[in-house]
Image 1 (tube, rainbow, N blue to C red):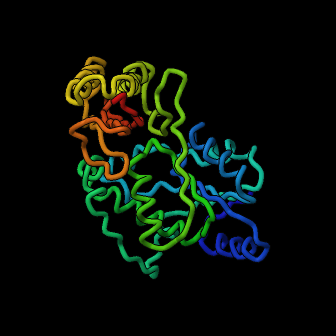
Image 2: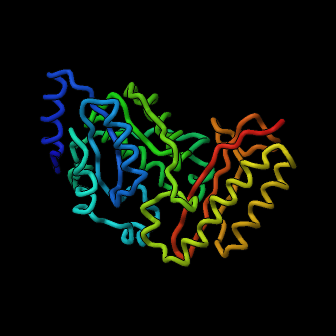
Image 3: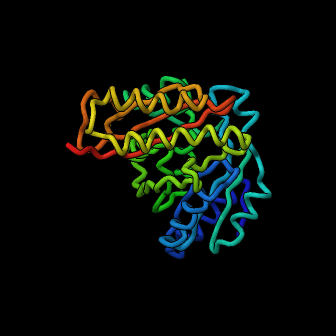
Amino acid sequence: MQIFVTRQELNNWRQQMRASQQQVGFVPTMGALHDGHLSLVHQACTANDFVVVSIFVNPKQFNQSTDLQSYPRMLEADLARLSNFRNIVIFAPDEEEMYPQDLPYKPMPLGQIGSILEGSRRPGHFEGVVHVVHHLFALVQPSKAYFGQKDYQQLAIIRQLNSYYGFGIEIIGCQTVRETDGLAMSSRNLRLSHQDKQKAISISQALHYVQNNAGKNTIDEVKNAAISIIEAAGLVLEYLEIVDPNTLESCSEWQATQVCCIAAFCGEVRLIDNMLCESVL
């Protein structure tokens, strides 16, 4: 395992890989690695000669300073979790290295898909995601990049980014990895108490309810029942929307396929999750 903290180190290594025609995969993370992250790394390792894993808590995508400050940082533990993989390169820059003043950057217009759901609740969030992923893609120049589907809207925007900037990278969306109780794995789960985790399970219960009842009743009836599951557990729901899987616009009627997206506060911790739902039409 090689660890780089500067852009120059990564660039030198990337030139060596290019000269030897090695295929490079990429898994971008903000650290606090869990089994969901490791599943992405595993998939990347099985399909590429080398894999770059970035660990960088990106300040530009946090719209609340308290959220940024409380985000877990545990580089040594992360490196230990990655130590069992072969042909891994870690890129762990600081903010100055990631955003040098002399680096040109043209922001991508996000359009409608960036203004709904997470976009409307977290102003500036996706602009920050696009900024850092643009720089990382330009540096790593991978053949394939791996992202979890738990951040469904983010994945859609990254596909848009890949096309807009002409990177030509194969973007691979990987299934959400869940705890045995159904809770989607997330670095934010580290901030949940045992009691909070029991409440947070209601999010996946609501998603499964929508999945199991898609097409059986009206969308509003199914949504309201799912909302009741979350509120009964004591979570503060920010949104529960059933949306088109491509445009992410709310569905007024059942389609063959849709996605249920949820954001809710469990105490002070904001959690998001989603699930693909096929209708019995």
